[in-house]
Length: 219
Image (cartoon, rainbow, N blue to C red; front, side):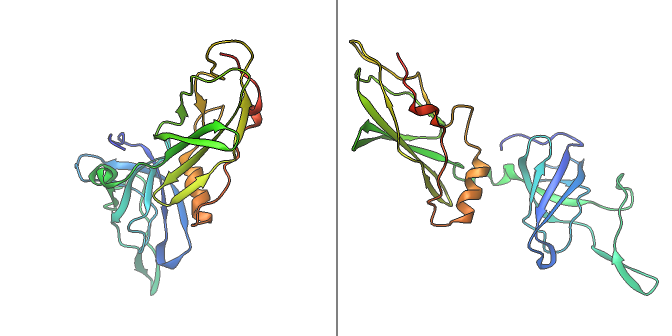
């Protein structure tokens, strides 16, 4: 992420306070957005949340990570309770969030695709791209082709099925379609891919492509 979050943007935080397996807390907003390294928000955090991801609820872009903030507990009549802060923030300093722009240049691309195409039993490596589509061709007419994609992230890799199609009859070169999309209705959501890889660190989860690709296309 290379831009800045808008003032008063809605926030949600994903963190692991006090050893909890996970906490998702919405209802926060950007409060102080003037500093270049961090912004503050009225987030519902506790100790141990540092490093938790803070997302813009409108875009679901990770805008930063929890850096520190308000005291968690106060004494009240001989008891200890959670500190309550008003939404306007007059009685609390808020939670500091380090902007992702500070460290975004250290993050490798979320996903890259290795593309393979060829006749049955003879898949050839065409190249690697961060774009979820690949222009194929020229292709021979009346010929069976197969293709496969391997999606890679810093967490591992996921291999698709081997898909097939047959080009139309006629002379000259053929392209089944202008481009091969990773899925016909848009991009694979990288968050879904990372979730699959997180479930299996060895990274052999199946991405289910559509049977759409088994149809025949003409140039």
